[in-house]
Image (cartoon, rainbow, N blue to C red):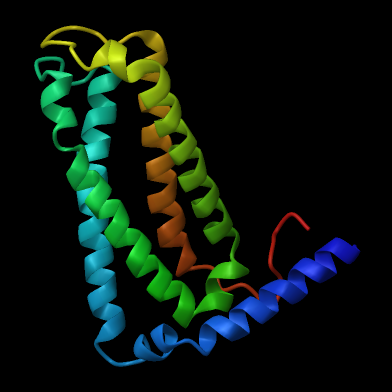
Length: 178
């Protein structure tokens, strides 16, 4: 119980501090939020359009496309992720309570963390085995599983992002499992 109280107090302090930042102040204008949302959507499109396509190929769809050709698009997905992180920070500073106390946000962050671990596993175990796969060749089962986990995580991120706007948590109730 003490740990929950300490964590709750820390989150309150963090939310208060975020609300006082220059970035939070900047995001209160009439055009900043819509511009950030548009950039967030563009970043999401880049991310899912490239990473999702690569994941689907790993899983066996679009076998005529060599994986190396799709892998050349990954930098666009990374750029989309960076845009989303930057705009996400803008949203967080302006409405910290809406995010920090929202179970959908918790699940979104968890899904991104799992996706990050998953991509590290892919590049340390499977990438060398699949980078030269040509048209019509299947990826090994572990690579297909990694692709499925990645796609599931990113779809979860999208779903949780949408749920953020529909769930308005009561102030200072930071987690749904406590």
